Image (cartoon, rainbow, N blue to C red; front, side, top):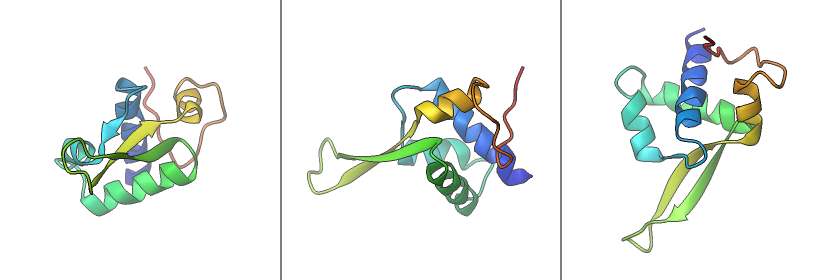
Length: 96
């Protein structure tokens, strides 16, 4: 159940910054206070695999040989949060 709650938190966080998304290091720093990195990583992989979020790489603005990874809510994720599609049993969405 703990993973279901974390997945819902992740989607909610990404909805707040939609359509921009969040850079990976910033994303982890927001959730790291309450969740272990392995838990965060596993929940992110689940949400990517189910198509609710996407992971994109962009060139680093200063270091040319480095990439910056961004998490972004997908249109399917938006529809899930808005109740337009069937709920996923692996995600607990706080409504209200």
